[in-house]
Each structure stands twice: as structure tokens, then as C-alpha cells.
View 1 (cartoon, rainbow, N blue to C red):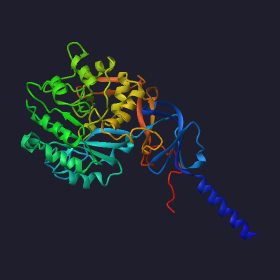
View 2 (view 1 turned 180 degrees about the horizontal axis):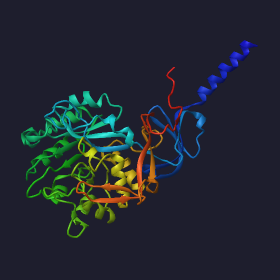
View 3 (view 1 turned 120 degrees about the vertical axis):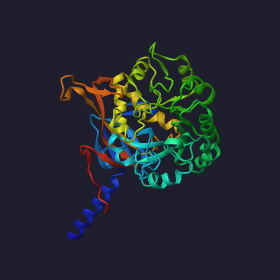
View 4 (view 1 turned 90 degrees about the vertical axis):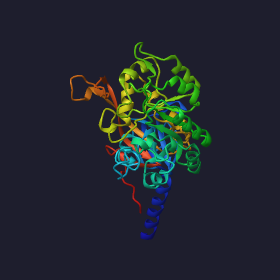
Length: 422
């Protein structure tokens, strides 16, 4: 009898294990998946690094782990396409193996970000070090816009050296690393000179990838109408699009409060307008009138580094929350942080929850300001100029799933929290 009982127990265990055909089942969350026009309460099943099923009711017993997402929003893993991650110990090299960049895993998952694109910290000369030091060891998916400057974002005279802007050498390294390099970056060049832009675009053409342009500054300013209409191609990216500095032309006419007509034409042409918030590259004086007029950014990104993360920018969710406070609807904010950036960098298996897509998922709480400990019942959002606005809601990360594994859980919503490796 004991032998029969033991056999039954073993059989029951075997059947129970094999009944769990998914690694994770996410239950009861409000799914927003802009690619598939899903905006409803749904369940999601994951196995390995793949989305296996999305349906109204998936049996939680089919999952080894179950995430209780009731009352929360479930979105594709957030994609930050303007980040700075080539951190290091060379104190005179700023963002290129230097102190101003950030190790991605320290800030990504706790803000729902599963993919970052380093925006030009490495050039073709330094990319091998960046790959070994950051890309290869990070749990976060790290991609790269390769700097047109061979030395990368070392600061000072290095980034002003037009002779080090080698389109052919840059394109060669990009084509040798298609899994990781998704575009070319021009950053921080100061001067009335189109050569840096043209060399970046030339590299982009040779490698068949987009270019991200960050004007450092010029007096007189470089005319962005000429940039959009004569130098950039459809699919190229204008970052810091809501900046307002004397050394850069703005997209919004400050006198009239309206988007300049040629900017609207540039959008029709296919130019991508990216937030790239940064330290001083975002002003409410540009963003609020633009958003109210219906001119939303194509992509929301942070330009996160050691300075911006502790200033007005803070993190991806804070930037997204600012756009909610300015009047952008939640669906559009999620799209600009997931599916659109995935398309811009030509990584269509990211940024969506289609069956077969990568199993990167963000589970977010839309916190209500009325529960805050203040008299206004709102959250405060400010920019580097000191301008402050109020918002009734704020996005917060509850659970982040990267490559089919729970990598962040704020309040222990996953059951069991730890999966036995035996």
C-alpha cells in the first residue's frame, strides 16, 4: 500500500509540474499594447523570453509564477532611446568610460525600463570596450547609437574634432555589430558648420541605420529648417526637441506659442521628434504649448546621466508623468515609450505584447494625487528653469519583467517570489 501511495504522490507531482506550461502568468491587469490596439483588462502568459498568450482569462495554475496585476497597467517593457551608460573610472572622459554615465541595471528595472539605447557615449574606437564593459554584463538590454566622433563622448576638444568624424570607419563598426548598434549619433558640436551633421548622415546611409542629432550650439544658430529639409532623411531623429536655449533654434515660436510650420512639414517628411530630456534640454515653455496644440513627441526619452537624474528629469516614469500632466493621454504616452521607439530603432520584436514578441513587460501603478500628503492633492513637476506644474497622476513601477524573468517587484505581487532552482 505504501508503494502505491508513493507512486500516486509522484504521479500527482509530475502532472502538476507539467500542467504549468508557462513560466509567468500576469493576472487581471489593464493591458495597454499600442501596436495591437489593446486597451483592456487581459491576462498574459510568458515562457522563456517569449510572449505565449494574451487572453481574457488564463488559468493561473498554468503558471509557475503568477503576478497579481489587478488595478495596475500592464505594458510592453519601456524603451529609453536616449541614455548614457558607458560608465567608467577615467575621470577626464565624462560620458565615455567616465564618471558622468550610469551602469544601467542600477536605475532601469525600478522604473519599468527594460531596454536602453546609449546615445553616443562610444565611438568606433571605443565601442569594443563599451560592449565588453557594459553591454555584455548588463541584465538590461543595452543598444547603442555610435558616436560619429571616433573617441566618443569624451568632452572638451575631442567632440569638436571634425577630423575624428570618420563616416566610413563608423559605418564599418556599426555593420560589424548589427545586434547592438542601431544608429549614429552627433552630439555636443559647437559651431556653425554642417560637416559634422553630414558625416553622421553619411555613416547612417552606409550602414542603413538612422541618425540622432543633438546640436551642441551655435551663434548664430544652425537653422533647423535646413537640418530637417536638406540634411536629414525620413526616420532620422531630432533629440532635445523641447529645448529652449539661446544657442539652438526652437521648434516652437516663443512669440506666438505655435509650432513653426516647417516643423510640421518635417514631421510629415518622417523626421522623428525625441524628448531627450537631459539637464537643460527640456523646457515647459516649449512643451506645454506644443502638447496643447496636439504636437506630441514621437518618442519619450530621458537623456539620463548623473546630473539629470538628480535634477528636474529624475527618470523615465517621471518624464512620462510630466506629459500626462501636460495633457497627453496615457495610451499615447505608453506608445511613445514602447512601440514607437522600437520602430524607430528597427527592433519590432520589442515594444509590444504580440504572441512571439520578447517577454519584456512593465507593470505600472497610476498613482492618484489625492492620496498625497499635501493640500493640493496633486504631484509637482518642474523643469530646470524653475517652472512648476501640477499633475493629478503619476506613474510608478510595481513589477518589471525582463526576458521572461521578474527582475523587480516593489510590493511582492509575484507568487511565489522565488522560484526554486532544484
